[in-house]
Length: 390
Ligand code: FAD
Ligand code: DHB
Image 1 (cartoon, rainbow, N blue to C red):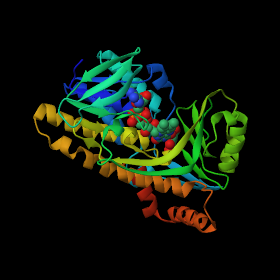
Image 2: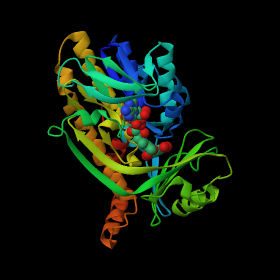
Image 3: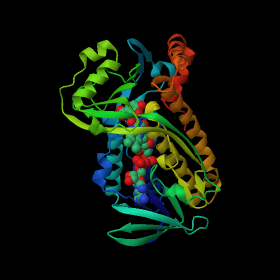
Image 4: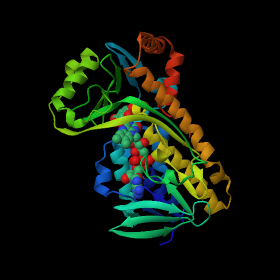
């Protein structure tokens, strides 16, 4: 089989790239290791920047997010019972949109089906040959047999654990990493949200987040020590722990008697791979970088990478200039590092770190107090939260 762009990974990055390339008349094939149902069952991000919504709309998959996504004009931070609203709209003129990653992926799958896109499922990429030349080959396994897909370019959209990044030679690839000594235990429930806006709650027992998917489905997270698994917890224990960490008023009115739809643990990590292009291989999304979820940036960064990569490939195939592909890595990384900084700052300010001494704890509280007193500080947070310009 032969195509113009082989896309490794059918998560949001790979599917969105496929859709945008299709609209530019560029042939592509997506190879995804899992089944469609498996990909759609992964509960992940929930907050979209308005720039992300614009890219989805450009890609022709913006109808449902426009109808069902909930614009949020603000978010709250809390420190025990002290509450601080960040007026995103008032400070920046923009909002964020609450719309689950699962829904984004579903919209992209529906669009792919409608245009008869080639998305190979349960097909695992083993290696990519010839990325230093102009005829790379993606070697994948499906139904027990090995297959080859020839392409002009390969897009590695295969997440943190995928093989694409490893194809960049050791001497060229640089990786920057910070692991955190905790994870987030998430619970999705058929219950109304705790509050109209998200609450990022700091407490000496650990961080907690009250989020939502709709008026009837809520998403909550609590910080747990690294190594802890969802099976170590019952829903009742989760609710009790959450209530201890969020403001008393919110805890008192929290509705917990609804079906628990999912519980899972996500580890927290900061990670960047440089460069994001080597020869005919490009990386986009979690394949190239991971942020801790505290700033709600992971999915949004995957979308901004894909936006840049689509522009670059469009210039190459339709306007015969290599300026876009030559500049892709530097352009994407410049935005990535700023989101890494923001996610790391939010994580550091809001979590309980076991190694922290009283000094660091006072620093965290001073940061919260500064935000409370300074509109300039709040504007800085808001500008990053709603998403830096594309
Ligand atoms: P992925 O969604 O990881 O997609 C990569 C795809 O590649 C997968 O479908 C995978 O099956 C496929 N693949 C891997 N290897 C191969 C192979 N060899 N061959 C073929 N296909 C392959 N972000 C937030 O903002 N908020 C959150 O709450 C949040 N929670 C998260 C929880 C977890 C457990 C994880 C892992 C991430 C979370 N994120 C969150 C981050 C966000 O979900 C990601 O940034 C986003 O999924 C990135 O999309 P992607 O398409 O780059 O990667
Ligand atoms: C959600 C996840 C996040 O990481 C975040 O910062 C906000 C919301 C969510 O899953 O709803």
